[in-house]
Image 1 (cartoon, rainbow, N blue to C red):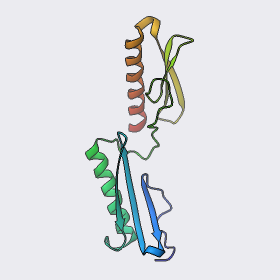
Image 2 (cartoon, rainbow, N blue to C red):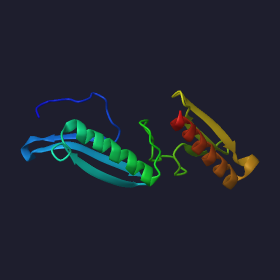
Image 3 (cartoon, rainbow, N blue to C red):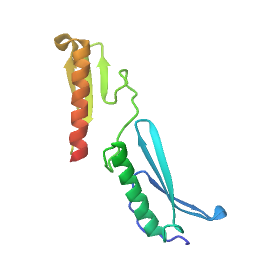
Length: 143
């Protein structure tokens, strides 16, 4: 095998493994969705070479994402929340009595809007904020 490279392009959720000591060469795929990880290894030898193994890995990743209901994108998606609401991109600003919604537009520019708790009530304002975040994330990923 040596240092043969088939592509400089990175493939999201696919890693190359070349471990000479164990005679292991292939592609390792990890699909993460809803806090669950599904993975599979594609051996060069069993798949007819490095390129064929990569094609099989990409096809498996895409099919697995579709089966799990995950949106297929090569863009990075933040899935862990460090906000005080538990929802990525939505945080409670008690000082101004509002929920703030952070998102990235389709051109990659960060944006923010807010929803008034005084105007809508806490529960309704939170739902509106979450709906805005979901809509904006869908717009970004479909661009």
